[in-house]
Image 1 (cartoon, rainbow over the protein chains, first blue to last red):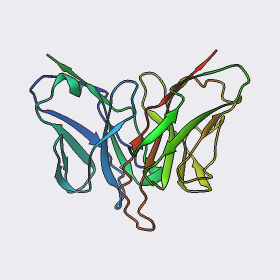
Image 2: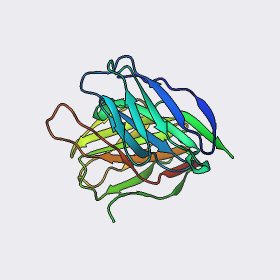
Image 3: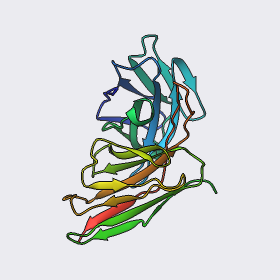
Image 4: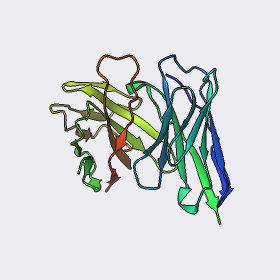
Length: 108
Length: 118
């Protein structure tokens, strides 16, 4: 199983850009990197997925270096409503595991 | 609306009792998953199923059982053998790519069932 390592928590202020890095040293050739967001008492919600280089959508960007051993989720101009737990997953189907995630707290 | 429905939202279990949590999806997804989440913790995989009539144990399957008789349904039974069942249970589904090596496997989650012991 591809294991991921993320910071346990991060603090930020409204309007700032937040970058959360995930380490996945044993990522397999066929593995994608997927990020989810979870609010309290809700199921995780898909944010973004990538395989290599950079991916961008309306809410986030994902940067993946050439060796794919890490990835960085970038949230532009965060607001209070971005306070949540963010999970990085790598793998395929039943091989994917949610770790403890990164608890992001956005302050006014 | 398409989505995943978990019921009930809250469930209470008596000592020695088996309880079943329902999970239904109308997304036509092949794969379904059950996770357990304890307070302040991440999600832990209990069971997953890639196709009908087939399922595999996850990391914490002991004390739980599942069935996958229909594509839309993946019920989870918490048996009396599970001594510490109090947790938030989440069901998810994803679309398989059928035979391809690279599967994006984006999981869509239900609203969860919170199980407590009386």
